[in-house]
Image (cartoon, rainbow, N blue to C red; front, side, top):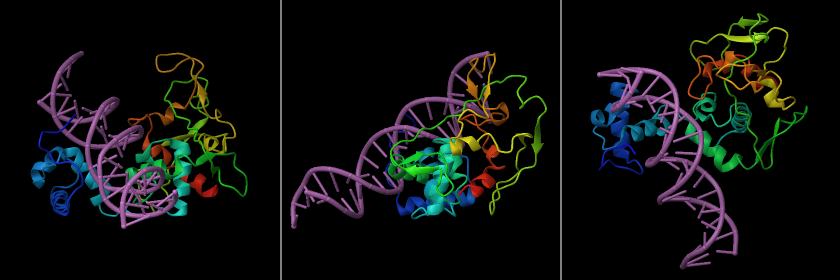
Length: 239
DNA sequence: AATAACTCCAACCGCCAAATG
DNA sequence: GCATTTGGCGGTTGGAGTTAT
């Protein structure tokens, strides 16, 4: 357990919010270990950070989730699993905590993904969620992802959103759709994955994800910006 | 009106990885 | 190379508010 004895816990008061807001406005976000001292707050760094990110930070959208937001959450959850911070990064103004709460309290028991039909979304409200978790692995040298049939393309950012500098991403020239497309349609769960052959990173014969999507990975083995490319276009074209 | 059951969400907890000394 | 510190994440919980009995 972290935190000194005597540090305040529980709900934040208006006065504490004012102190924290002033502190962040003055010194900027980050250096959370210094915030309690700088702000005159009897709170641990984690509590300060959480309060700022989930409540005080400007532009946080509060109130009920709109239908399009719910739809996006479900689609992204099917793609990403419980990576709430990544999902939140695609929903302007919503925090990871809000989305996690919304999912756990309202969607988790209701949503099941289904084969997509023309007039229906790729999910429905029923009982169960089956998440496919990506795992960074090695893959065969003969893989299309390594043998030159993949090409580097420029990135696009989602409409109306500035996500900063995009990172390069690879696509297979002969495959019209991206590998993650299958995840959203459930047509062929393993299509687009590759089979590792040997080495310390993966188990032989295990279906896995192309390595380019595991490069520059974050804590969960994913590069957040790797999704900035065609995913938006795909989601837009599959309402 | 009383209270039990349920819902929702803010906040805490423990863990992990990166940074630092 | 190792130990410690820090930032960040997802899982879980406590309790306030709401609804049902």
